[in-house]
Amino acid sequence: MAHRNRGYIDVDSLQQELIADGDIVERIASFYNVSLPELHKTQNETRLACIFACGKEQETGDRAISIKIKQDGAVFRCFQYGCTVRGNLLNLMYLMKHNSEPADGKLKGRDFKEIAADLQALVAGRPPEKNVGTVSTSQSSTTESMNDKSPLINIPLKDSENERARELINLNEQFITDVAEMSPQAAAYVRKRPFMTPEIMKKFHCGYLPSNAKGLLRGHFVYGYPDADGNVLTWFGRNLNYEDQHKKWQRSGDSSKEPHKFKFVKGFHRGQELYGEPQFHGLATPEQLQQIGIILVEGPNDVINLHTLGIPALAVCSNTVTESQADKLATLANSIPGGHVSVMFDLDREGENGAKQTVMELAKRCRVRLAWSIDFADGRFKGRQPESVTVEDWDTAILPTLMHVS
Image (cartoon, helix red, strand yellow):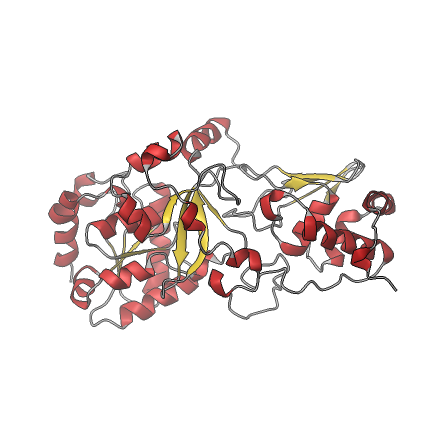
């Protein structure tokens, strides 16, 4: 008997057969053991909330994804703002199986053969074949069972079972750190942040990934996210058009499609990590931490700027803290005599609300205080972020207050 992967598979006929049978969304999900949210069906379309790890920071609306089931190939698209997930039935199957898009967003070569074989098995009523090594253990599957209480773990790229993930280890070799060679948007982004020198970018494994590079983060300003030992766990990108997109979103009044500032690689469990650990441990001294506490900020630029001022800081890469992050911070704080966490989130409405949640969560575990607030220093810092803090700001206002509080 000839091996199936050497035989011709009539993909077009199989797709039409599957579409004719009906309930294709449910059948594909059942085939890959994927749990679906509520489906909203009409005669020609199925709508559902986005179930894919596409970098979104919160749940989408319950009709974000549209699947046109009567068109050739069953065309689908996600209408979540900034999302590019779309394609035909084969692309949908790949997403259901891997919770990520194929390389370069195109289904070809080995990936195409794999899904074509799955399509053949699906139509024939057979279970999918196991493809060893095609799914990274570091990816969060859409089928992460709610009954599975094992902790989520991020695996360093170098140790991933996924060959594609391992190939991303040296993504920073493609980064541009010279503003003269960046796109206008990237150059403007860097020039607004004087602390972002080529030397600092190299130290923090960040830089501009040009639009002609490979990968989903091309055209973004990209940051490496290392673990405490300095091993890169993932890469994430800053949307360089975020400010313009956010203004348009505010004018539109559409609360369901707020643009995202950062885009994370699919499957990364952000809430399990603290950004900036290697640099923090390399800079901090016990005496310094006793005086000012563990400075906790929102984003990577906050960490980087404070680092250039000689101030060790960690970031949650959000405006709230998770239980896992709070546990890690408390363990570190409680290991230092008189140790505590000083929360220094952005001084806007979201940052203030997030700081309150973070202080309450940390207070259950260790000593905690606010490093600043909107009313701090007669409102001098209202609307500011830690990435904008200068040496004068720190020495004349923030540091004396931190050292004065017992």
